[in-house]
Structures are given as C-alpha cells and as structure tokens.
Length: 448
Image (cartoon, rainbow, N blue to C red; front, side, top):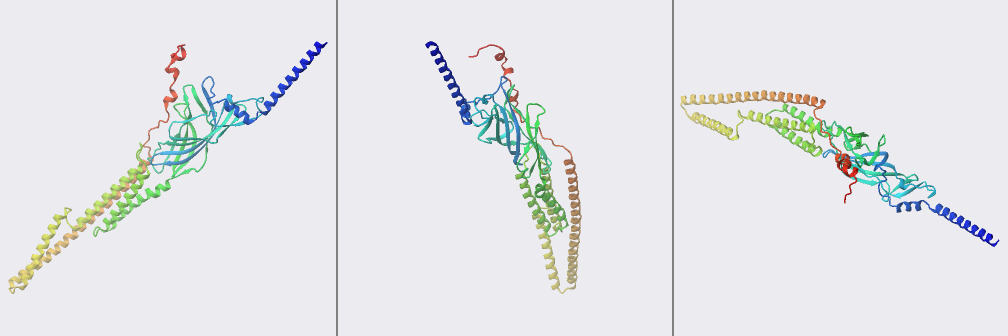
C-alpha cells in the first residue's frame, strides 16, 4: 500500500516537472522578440552567398531608377546615378513561428551577404547602400537597395554635331563564371528620375537591352540627344555670319585699305570661335565631327580672301606685286626725272632766246603729256583691278555655294560609322574550370 502511494507521488512529481519545463520553453519562445532574433541571426555570421548545389544565386531586381548627372562632350564620358532595388532568398535567414512571432526584421547591411554588382564598362564607380539596414522576411526573402554612381565612356557618333542622337551602354551585371555566379533577373521597365536635361545633352530613353552575341549579357541602353540650339547660336551661326560679312566686304573699294582692315578683323574673330570649338568638342573619336572640317574650310577661305584683297590693293598702287625696294627705286627715278624736267623748264624760261623758249614750251608739253599718260595708265590699272576683284568675288561666291551643297549631301548620307565598343570582359564570363581542368572534376586524384 505504501509502495503504491510512493509510485503515485513520484509520477505526480514527474508530471508537474514536465509541465514546468514546457511552460518555461513557451515563455522563452514568446520572449524572443525581433531584436533577440536579429542578434541570433547576426551571431550565425551568414556572410557567404546562399548558393545551392549549382553554385549560383538568383537575384531579382524589382526596380531600377536611372538619372543622368552630366555628360562631358570633350572626353565623351557620362556620369549617372542608378538606384537598384533587389530581392533574393537566403534560406539561412528564415525562421519559423516557434522561434519568433516576428514576420520581418531589420539587419545591418554589413552583417549578412549582399550581392555585388559588376559594371564591365565603368571608368569609375561608387556603390552606396540606400539604407544601413536590410529587410528580412520570415521565409528568408531579403529586400535590399543600392545606389550606384557610375562614370562610363561612350562612343557616340558626333559626325553631324550638333544634330546628334546615340546610345550609351551601362553594363550592370552580376559576377558569373561558367555555371556559377550571380544570376540577375531584370524588370521590364526602368524609371527615369531627376532632370532629363544634362547641359546640352538630353536623356531621351533608358531601356534594358540584351546583347545579341550573348544572352547572359544585359545592359542599360541610354539614348541621348543634343539640344542643338546652343551650338547653333554660339558656333554655326557666327561662322555663317562671318562668311557672309566676308562676301559683303567685296563691296568696299580696294583703294584705301578699309577692306583689308575688315578682313583681318574677321579672321581674328573667327580664330576666337575656333578656340571655343576646340575647348568644347572632342576630335579624337573615330568619326571626327563635321563641324571641325567646316571651321577649317571657313578659316582657309577667310585667309585666302584677305590675301587676295591685299594683293589687289597692291596692284592699285603699282603695276607689280614685287617687293617694296623695287617699287621705291622706280618711284625715285620718276621723281628725279620730274625734278630734272622742272629744272629745265625753269632754266629755259629765264632764257631770252626764242629757240630756247620754244624748247622749254616743248618740254612743258611733254611733261603734261607724260602726266596725262600716267593718269591713263592708272585708270586702266584700276579698271583691271576692279575686273579682277569682281572675278574673285564670283569665285568665292561659287565656292561657298558649292560648299553648302556638299555639306547638305554629306549630312544626309551615313558615311561615317564608329566601331562598336567592346564592353564585356569575356574572360570572366566564358572561362570555365571544368574545361580547363577536367581531370580534377572527373578523377579521384588527390592534390597536395
């Protein structure tokens, strides 16, 4: 009887102890809040990629926000800001309801694994997390966002500058090597934020494009165009007006030098615009802008027009364009001849002899005839210079009209195509350890 009571008491004691342990476990489970769960996950140090047996991780990019910050026309470099929102599943970060009732927790971004994006054609890149914490759901889904400040080199065809439109690729990808790596799933659309105007460049459109040579290569294709108003007002219009002023300057008389002063001023003014063009526009691309050739033609035409005007002015003063010393000697000889004639006239007038008076009168007549002959030569010389001036004007007018026609034809035809840029590092994507070391994976060889 006592033995039965002792057994019953022991059984009751064990049951009460079991209930006490279960109640403590329930209390402990209920007491693990979000911070407790976060500290527990952080303590596991899950900083490696959550890849499966095929050593690949799929990351879904939920949204992409793009903004063009600036475009350097001189160096053909584009600076942009890209915000990428990503989501992936990490089974090591998941928990069940028995562990905690929390549906989501916030973890520091540097305490867990986050995908690293690669930009193959980036000159400079700065990656910043959008927030210091990442959102982790109960099923292990992680929501994360990064901001990329990217500088890429663009190969836009500037041949028809400032009437230019072209594409600039931004190759945002995940690390990939053979069947391992980061597999990115892109959204269908990209949101453009901020101002679409970046100086004289306008961002027309941004879309996700797959490389035709490889399906694994995907990049952002940024379509840019130039607002031609500024370039037309500051470069093309002044050059056209200077060329028009050069043609109108032929209306000025050749004598006097006013035309030469105007043409020298036009050449100096055009040189200033040429310096502005060289400081603003690059000429080192495979297709040099047509405006460089335009400015070269205008400068050569202005200089030739100035030289022709100087030569014509010289011809109006003398029959020859020989150096100054020769012309001076001729003038001094004519002056001496005139002085001798004047002296002879004065000497003969003092003579009372009739024959000498007749001779002096003859000399006076000869002197007046020489002056009249010189005037006729000067008039014929001026007429010849005027005809030559008209011929030069017609020649320059014809050259300018022909040049305009050629420019229109050249701009209408696609005669300059830049080479396609190689933006992918193919060694990173196509190199395979399985192909390079097949014996390592198919044999049971042990390597020390």
